[in-house]
Image (cartoon, rainbow, N blue to C red; front, side, top):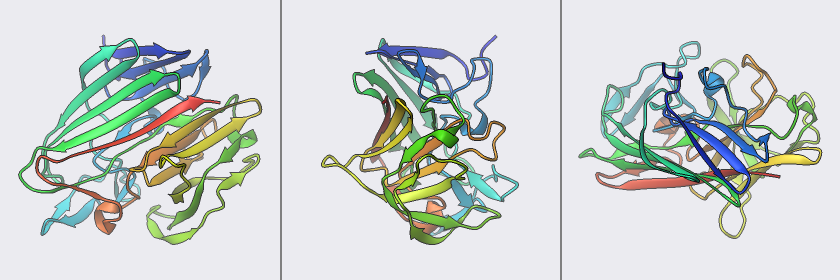
Length: 294
């Protein structure tokens, strides 16, 4: 019998060990035996979106409906209690191995045109380990004969050390966040964000999309999560202009970890158009992010 997420692919390098599944999910990431992501067992499904890939849009899409290319498109409502289409179309698909070496695995998936998204995409994701930890590169090529709307993201839950997260310190270099309505968690506006949420987090509840990220000379933005002498960082390249930060308070395992989700576009980008990539026929897009130990 197969595991619920299919085949399990192990990679390792410089004290880092990872397991990536046939469903494209980073099931485990460890450094010197310490877990850096809140994963799941091989005989389980990834609850709460754990480490799933969010393509061709991350986060929520209002009513699953949007206009593009002169037509109105209607997607299935995959978050029915809030009336939204959530986290794209590849969370539960089977990827094909294109390359698997000791320290890297590359997966491919052909996303067929379908109701609500009538464009075909060739997708790739590469997980590579090295001295600087894990680097994830997500790519897409438009195989259709018309322009396609596109954004990408991922949903890792980070572990700084022993939980819960209330005692952890979070450094989040952002100056703006999206305000949302309480019922559907859809964007209503913007407000200033402090950058360092709390030290420690205490009972702070986070489910925020943040932007205007502070970056280094190479355009990289870095989030740091610390628990005393240990911790974890997540970095994103310049294509990722947004991060969703989530303490998981409404999941079956609240506050045992903190999700820091790289996103190239904000919630409801298919409607707002903000930071949305329009892939011309034959054009490609690629974005990278990664995780390393503190």
